[in-house]
Image (cartoon, rainbow, N blue to C red; front, side, top):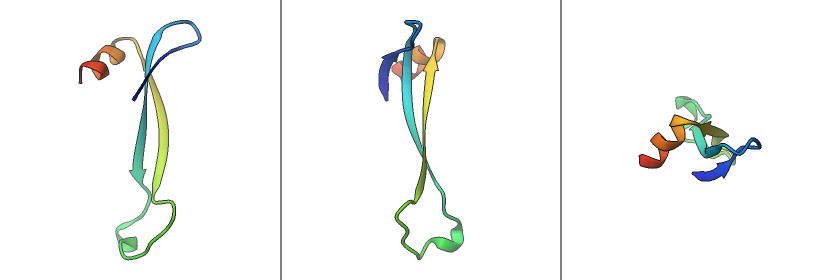
Length: 53
């Protein structure tokens, strides 16, 4: 989690999410990219909630 400010100066929090991208049939195989990664930026009340969590 990163504390930031948006271009307009609002406080924001960015969170990196990783979700598996393989099916149950691929449990026994090894692949280099096992996850999808996504950065999500939150502003407003969500910032306070995430920081309190």
